Length: 461
Image (cartoon, rainbow, N blue to C red; front, top):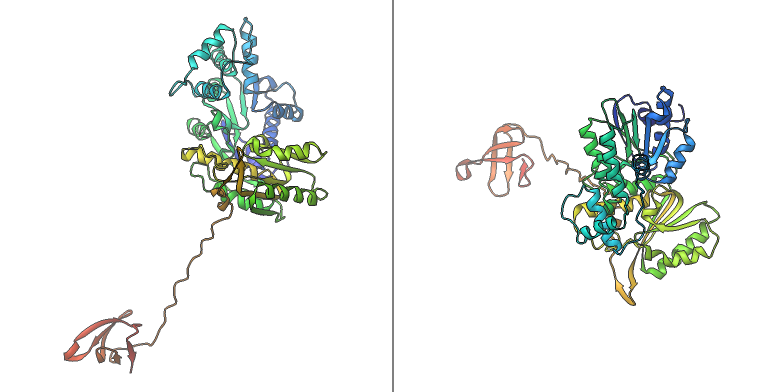
């Protein structure tokens, strides 16, 4: 167990019935999850009584390779539900592949379904349902609803349920999870609300907080970062601290390396492109892995052409697709207002997801990070002017300068009976001293006055 940190051990060895691990970027969450499964197996729990849910097949396959008993059920939500339906339904299940509906419409239908059909029903939704029924087709939301009915009817459960990437769970999946939990079930969820970037397809990062409250879950935070250098984490922490709706934590670098963060604003995307290519060529022998990341797919066209034609150690992809990966050197390009954050966002919640997206991009970098924007861009055959993203300023921590209080100048020490001169009232005698207040008798003409002992108009005779 020496290979684990104290905060990792606290999670691996938890004795709580319900545990939420808030795992910061680069904190070794997959390692912790796998170690937790192995710990449960060591406690004598049968592999068939353990369910582990991940969000990608790749992650599921990786976990299978690293656990002690291959009979542990490790699946994505979709695969787990699909297998349930195949086991309990006699009719043929055909998954929809093509339809007459647009991608935008399908996204709206999906979000309506995963949010438990709450809110305003999207236009053409009923047509979509009819199209599936007529052609005997199912989408994966239908499969999850069928699985939910099976779980309820057959009271399906497990002794231990573990879920990875819990911040990407939607309301339908959370309901499935809840119905799998019985009195004897122990749960263990791992996620990072700061890396929740799939709200556009129905994920709800607030479900972590809901789970903690509903199950009185023990909350453990993994803040040690084993990936990035100090400067990169300073920028990442500074950026994400601007989000109001989050579980507060700060990533702590384990390495002593300083690293480097370079922020550039170029005249146009051509200069930006030339700079990135030049930097890559200068660094390619020194570092092993590189990535060029961007908000929208069109931003990578030139780079994909350049690097597809070359055998290279450079990955050119969107920020969304880079999640879970890490690289020695990362270039985040096109960080302009209207791009990141996107011009279509309308709410604070949407803007915070855009900020989380940049946070995810930044925390892919291990050694060097380059963040760039450009003043001009070429869209639809026209040259347009654009501003640097408001997020870029947030990469630099705010320095709060405390102004020192002016030192009090003690002009003189006074005693009762001392004579003083006043610029306006003339000569007077101190009759009383109350801390810094002098009571002075200026005679019949000006009477008694109360003045501060360091008042600039008086001097001791």
